Image 1 (cartoon, rainbow, N blue to C red):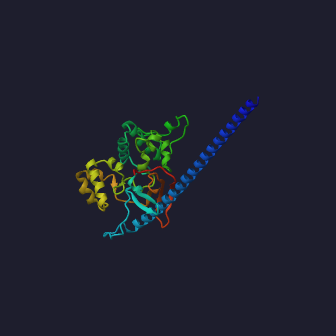
Image 2 (cartoon, rainbow, N blue to C red):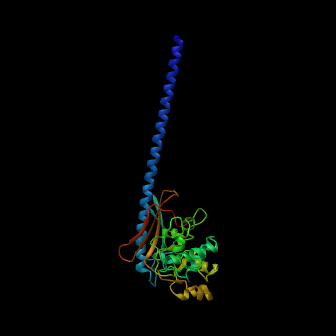
Image 3 (tube, rainbow, N blue to C red):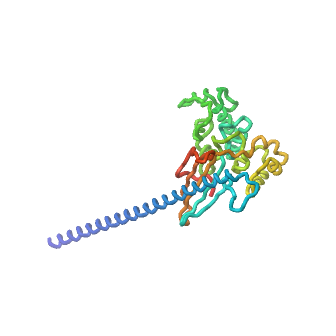
Length: 320
């Protein structure tokens, strides 16, 4: 009987010790998890501040560009930033950053698009593996959405189509107020607008803040350049190479590269920059390749920037 009681006592002690060990291990794991969470949170905040500092640097460079972009002689140290999305880097103590500027004048303005310039958007869609039938529907439907009448283009859509949907609504017949509004337009899907793992979405090449229906040749992304009628792949490459050296200042500069095709190309391009830009900045810490991204669309028309959108964090728009 005594041996039996001793055995039970030993078993109970072992159970108590086991439970205590489990509690200690759980507590240790919890503390470790919280410590790692604190470190990650701290690093995330630091990366965010670095990205925001890069945004401020980009805005400063933007105003410097507006002041000196017309200079005929470039003094060393007084160069202006480019507005075609190329990366600029900097260092802040143990952190680093990258920022890029892209003029909205280099994108396709869906509010100012015409039946003529709509071909640029159609070519862009075709280049992103959208079928020709769907590309025709999207272009005509965007034009129908922004015009003031209720007359449907060949492949477009007006009230008759939108009122037949499960959740009916009318065609706006007015300019777009946001890029996301495109999801209301016939043919535009989230995959086409925002992209997926295989490709980017068209939202990165469209704008509602342009100044004309034409594309600024100095700011156009390579995907938009490839969509311009009359511009061969070889000529598009020469334009990108030329921009690495200097921006285009006159029509003859462009004619020299595009040759006889300029008569066609000239209907779709200009060199008017406007005052609205997209800025993307990324903050890094140490050797980490994972950064914090901030993206803003702003106007630099006055001495104080006017923000149209500010996303923090945001997905990375350009390739690293």
